[in-house]
Image (cartoon, rainbow, N blue to C red; front, side, top):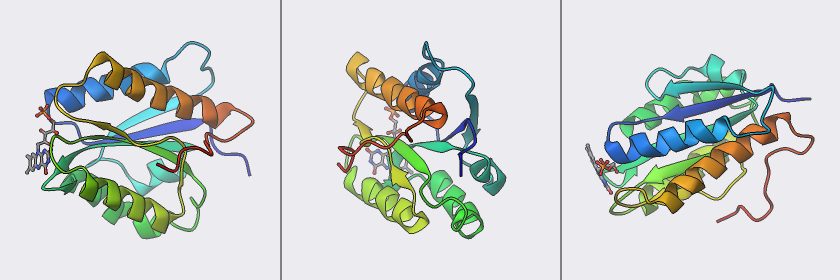
Length: 164
Ligand SMILES: Cc1cc2nc3c(=O)[nH]c(=O)nc-3n(C[C@H](O)[C@H](O)[C@H](O)COP(=O)(O)O)c2cc1C
């Protein structure tokens, strides 16, 4: 079944670094050549199961807090998990993470939750430490542009080399 031409960005953004990364993601969704994709950007505390069910792909963004994903993003998953699990199997997603210390726990959490949902990682996780460099922001931009293109392309935004 064709996926909806809509990219959902679910993020927790509370700091200059995460704000810069979100802006790069927003900019990536507006990249030249991307047409016919609706972009829906939701703070993690306001994103709903209906948002997820209407999405053709999802970008997840969070800082590492206490060595885990932010409570807000965890709340998002806690809220939507059982409602969306059956219908969104195979949904392409990609994640960006800001972590100055200990990204491992947050990355493990993202991998484990999305595996439980049956979502498919479409791009390698983007992990940024400290104030994002232009290269970091370009990685965020590219992540979002790829996902946005994927929801309207013939091929899903899957990347066989994206297991890392
Ligand atoms: C409750 C709380 C816990 C945090 N735990 C971590 C952590 O485990 N690792 C980390 O790198 N940063 C941690 N931070 C810092 C934020 O992740 C940080 O603000 C974010 O990565 C963005 O960086 P910036 O404040 O320099 O813009 C924590 C922040 C809060 C509020």
